[in-house]
Length: 233
Ligand SMILES: O=C(O)CCC(=O)C(=O)O
Ligand SMILES: [Fe+2]
Image (cartoon, rainbow, N blue to C red; front, top):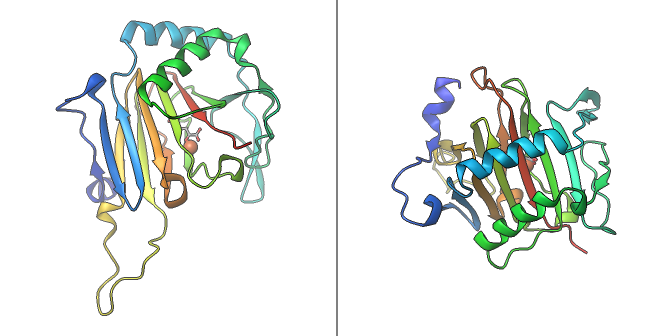
């Protein structure tokens, strides 16, 4: 990472676990919150799931439109959803919805996610596969209308560790009269998404923050990510 950028970011350390799986809540302020559980799934279960998903999921690498130009999405993807939901569309791409029933381990992961996040519900899943360090997801927020105004997104990571960055969208409040605009040092965060970890983005995280998985030359192996989402009906 650019050393200047790193200097401005608050790194969220992976230490002092005091709750199950090392769970911690990270308050981003103004109604946005992360829950991070570094040891959500046991290691060996995580590798079994990784191998299954890598082999069995019908991965595709679609052409998407970004700033009016067509390009290959820089990672593989697959979409799973309950039947009868409104269609998902992002970057000009409408993924085919596959069925949960065709991939039974997905239901087991969903059950574990729901147990860790009581009161949450998810009826769809977008999977990502990063084949190496040049696969990435650019800065974005998952703020499609079909997820509603304050969606919760639960993300399970398997395989190669990658950095997850968060950056506040433009400050919404003007600086007090006569003061310089607020420095952005508190408005960026990074965390390393571990093999078998769970990250939930809650509250206004999609409205007020952007997130990304940047390219990393040193990330030499495959990472699979599952993002559970609730399409509003
Ligand atoms: O791979 C990740 O951890 C994040 C993926 C993501 O942001 C997305 O699918 O919207
Ligand atoms: Fe996202």
